[in-house]
Length: 84
Image 1 (cartoon, helix red, strand yellow):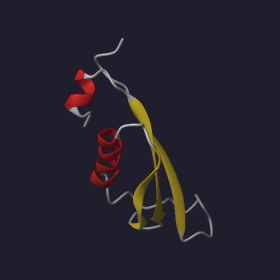
Image 2 (cartoon, rainbow, N blue to C red):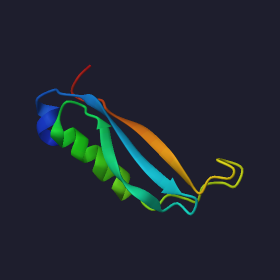
Image 3 (cartoon, one colour):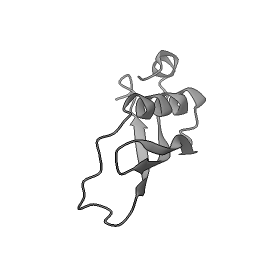
Image 4 (spheres, one colour):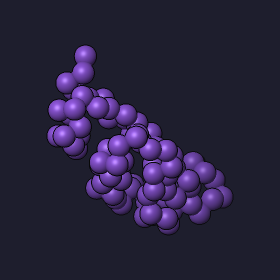
């Protein structure tokens, strides 16, 4: 999912995405970038990666006991394979 123009430009970065997940693995709020990688296309690829993973597996009963949903913050790193 690494955008080809970013690979060729030797760019890289980390996008941080936040969303709220219900106990059944569905999402309560849409994923959104809360910290940009500095590149719109990398941020878009991070959102696409999260959306492509939906729905998530149900949250185990022993995690977040008593909560109907959990806020998840995901750092998604784009390490450019063309940069050593």
